Length: 204
Image 1 (tube, rainbow, N blue to C red):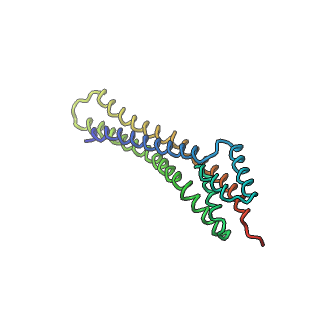
Image 2: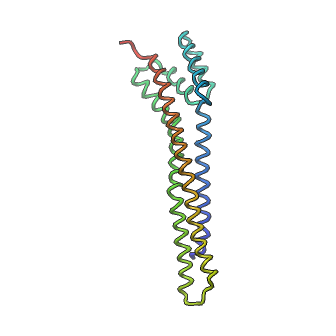
């Protein structure tokens, strides 16, 4: 039974790693879709919007945002479409869209990656325990046991441990890198949107 579970542990470890990598790739691609390639490109977009708004052509600004799937243009469109709302209500609408459409899905994927990071060593430990159980079970039979047989069981245990750690360590770095990029995106969006929202602040 322990031998059968040992082999199954390899499968679980592999699936755990693949799921973590899949989530990481999804977040990485999503970040590339939502961000501008560089600050100059983002500033060019903001300048275009500011010039259009200065001319009072809100419809043209909205159309410009509709054709751009990145986060800042889409949130800018939300601001422009709802510009008649009270300032606090407008901020609330934008914050909800930012969390729901931009940050939320990526944070959910990051949480899955962190779950994979936590479960990798646990699955490895499970395989280690099964390997040691099989090794001591073989010794406990009282029969003459070849050293190679014991070594094989211990090797399975150590391989499971190595696979678990090999999953957790790189994915931990990847998750941290993605978190930093998400926070950077959030800060950039917040700064740009605050400047945009200030244009629609009611005069005192």
